[in-house]
Length: 83
Image (cartoon, rainbow, N blue to C red; front, top):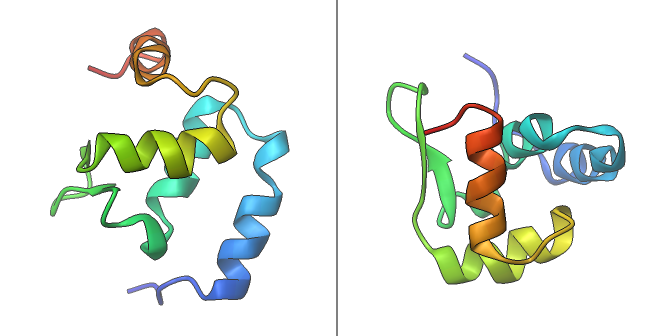
């Protein structure tokens, strides 16, 4: 089993976001323990959920995605094939 990412790993991960596409960014964000109260994988790791939409918009979207509206995020998810 892999060890949980450290703060340094998280910083390095976030620093590379400019070079990642939407799906890669989302996957990276799901790997950051600091955000697990906002979004996280389910127990089997084949699905994820956003548990705090307001915090997701304020903390994650405003820092890591171009648009800061949740509706824009969900439209983009559908374009990438998420349901």
